[in-house]
Length: 470
Image (cartoon, rainbow, N blue to C red):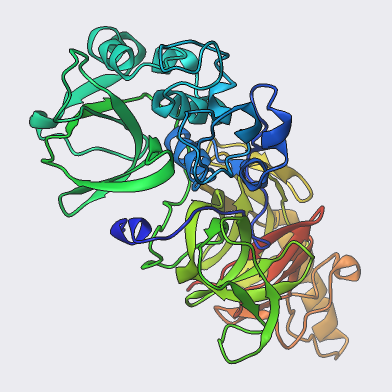
């Protein structure tokens, strides 16, 4: 992950994909926002994506949604749009209330706001206050909590000289090298990541706005780091510079000319324009292009390099295993899939066998039509039942009778079992394995094929099956 590219001018954010489903819960402000802020792009960005349940990821995503917000000169500037504002009036202070800290603005929302911004992001990401020491608006006091009390809440403090490598979601404390005050810290930010001896952070009240910054790990401006015992979730890592196989997710449009194209090709023609700094959901990805839906409902393809990812979609993989046959279902976090029908999955491998259900990791057996809501990657193993001895003898007698009658007994196929009348018809596209044919399987709202990736819909939810693996 090359976060340096972020600081080179990329803005922020992301929404989830059409092939994956919505994540845990949408971000609703934890307090009554001001009317001015409610009419802004930053408020829309906050509402655009959904929390993943991974605390560090969510805190960074919330912070990125506010990129570009600028402080104002009075309460009429809480929309973040006064590019010349310099009196510390910001929406983030509304969460903490009016204060007078001697900066000349009296009892108001105009006070130093770097710590308020970080705490605001933690609150909107629903990080438990107990894990962070409370509602600090003082960098010095907050650092002191990490040093003296944080350990009992799972938090830890690491000085710059400890050779600690900061992690996403850590708080980074600074102190001006020219400071004459006795405070241990006078500025704070949120770590996005660390690579090649550099740490990358997002900060409020840096140059009077919310912005991205980078520093050498040995920079003496850095005092240390506060690590929080965030809740974690099994989600894909955010690919900030799109060097890996990028997953659909929430992204923020950059400042450049943003056009959506008819196809994943810059020469395919423009179909829509996009808003710089706005959050968009990448619906699907092809190479270095993502498909988006614009504010007016149009859909088109955009180069991913013109966006900054906030979060990718959280999902789990359900592997359904029947011998050498393996199907994979991708299920969005918090969503469910229906166990496929199995009453027609009869195979003849040596002797007639019937697949009657799926055994979960815990040993429970789930039948067709039951609903599974995974909370982690899950494996379902086939439960096989073989014909009883009586049934086998009966089949043998039937064979003998046919021979005596001078009739020819056709070899039994998969679609010619005892309940063949209720079985789906095998097709030429049905899966073939070990000399037997398995009819195409319908379940989870779609058809499971053998050689291709197929989409299943369950209650309007798109689930993606992987290719059959041998």
